[in-house]
Structure formats: C-alpha cells, structure tokens
Amino acid sequence: MKQEHIDAGKAIQKRTGKTFYLATRFLPERVRHATHVLYAFFRIADEVVDDADGAPPEEQRARLEDLRAQALGERPPDDPVLEAFEELRERHGITDEEVDTFIDAMATDIETDRYETYADLEAYMRGSAASVGVMMTAIMEPDAEETALPHAVKLGEAFQMTNFLRDVREDVVERDRIYVPQETLRDHGVDPEQIERLEHSESFGAVMASELQRTEDLYREGVAGIRYLPEDCQLPVLLAAVLYAEHHTVIRAQGYDVLSSEPSLSTARKLWCLAKTRWHWHWNRDPEAVFKRVSAVPTAEPDRRGPEHGDGVPTR
Image 1 (cartoon, one colour):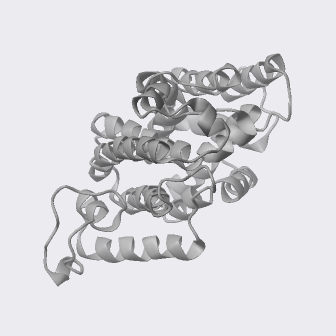
Image 2 (cartoon, helix red, strand yellow; image 1 turned 90 degrees about the horizontal axis):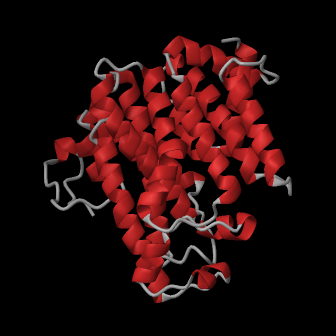
C-alpha cells in the first residue's frame, strides 16, 4: 500500500477512533498500517448512514452500493482509503461475502432504529461488529486462524456493545436510534419514550446493569482467544479490550446514568490503563490473567498471586 493511502486511513482513525487508535499504535507495522486502512473503511461506510445530513434513504442506499462496488473492485476506487482497502482485501484473502455482510449491516441502519430482542441485535452485529473481528484476524494472520476467529467475533461484539451502552444518549438525540433491546426494557418496566426524553431512573439503571453483564460475558469469551494471535499482536489487542471495557467503570460510577451525560475516558485514564496493562504484561504473558487483573470486567474468582505478578490485590 502507498504511504499516502496509509496516512489517509490513519488520519481518519486518529480523528474518529481515539481509543482504538491508542491501542493500534502498539501493533507491529505490518498490521498497524493495515489497521489504519481497515478502520477508515469501516468509518467511511458508517458515516454514510450516521452522518447522512438529512439525505433521503434511497440516496444513502445508493452511496452504500457505490461503496460496495469500489470495495469489491467492481469499479475504480475514488478515494485513497478505498484504493488501499482493495489491495489489502486481495493480499489477506478477505472474502467478498465478508465485505457484503458488513455493508448490508450498514444498510440496516437506514431503516431500523429499534431491536426487539438481543438475537435481533446480535444478527445486526454479525455484520457491523463480527465482520470487523474477522477482517482484523485476517490481517494479523495467526497460525491457528480457525481457532482464533470465534473469539475475535465475540470481542468485536463486546466492543460494539460497549459503544451502544456508552452512546445511548447520542444515538437517541442525533439518530433516533435505541440499540438496547426492547425486551430488556420491558423486563425492567422501562418505556422507550423515557429514553427518548432522556429520563434516567432506577429501572433504566437496572437495564444498563443487565446489558453490561451480558457485554462482559462477551469480553471474557473474546479475550480467551487473544493467546491464538501472533505474539506481537497480543498486547495491543489486550490493551484495546482493557480500554473499551474501562467505559463500564465510568458508567457504573455515574450510577448507570448515560442519559444525562455520555461517559468518556480522559487522557489520563487511558494512559493509566495503558501503563498498568503493560506492567502486568511484563510479569505475565497470559492475556486472560492480565485482563482479569487490570480490566473493569469483574471476575468470579479473586486472583491472589504474589507481588512478582502484580500487587496481589483481589480483582474487582
């Protein structure tokens, strides 16, 4: 890939995905450059529907179909990121079906703004999140790819669920979307109109607590597969998981109120997550053990190992 194309992707990632960008910086160059391009491609497609600026649905669909044709090499790319993505796709064997699955999920956002069940949401995430995990795994080229893939899918879903729970306010205000399953709202007696009015309550807090637990199960499944990635990719992926999951600490600290203000990570907090993850990684190269110790995701069994592995404090 040409450096100018890599730089174009990097600029988009740095501007729109600061948390993931921080973790990307620790990837080896062969994967880092491809990640800049992949992330930028995802953002370009996502912005067709998320930043439509009042464009009618048929225009959004047409733009996505044009993007699909360029991504699949059916017509010459008109953007440096798309040119680089086409080369990357061929080099790493990313299938047409995976690209189609991702674009189809983006198209779903044009018409769908509510999800009845978690199964419905999961079907959407197969394109919007799992495809990201599949493509990222492809560019890392692990020896045990088939073993790594199911975990990569779960980690991609975990990242997206964290984004959904973090962005409830933004999604409803800017896009009239609610990604929290309607069945979860009903289970806790929450009317969707309450969310539309940005009214927090104990019942909505219970909804958030329930969905955080579901998401944290996804993190555990996803992180369990990091060991199957190339050694020089394991810490960056682990760091990304720690950083995304850290939003759960902020959400809980706000009493699960994500309607009054959107939870965010300060630069200092991100750097602290980075520092403690790298420190524990120095002593123990087991991704699951380090994640249990440093992440916001609770574990059922406290880790009471000695100071040579860390501070010996039980995990939250």
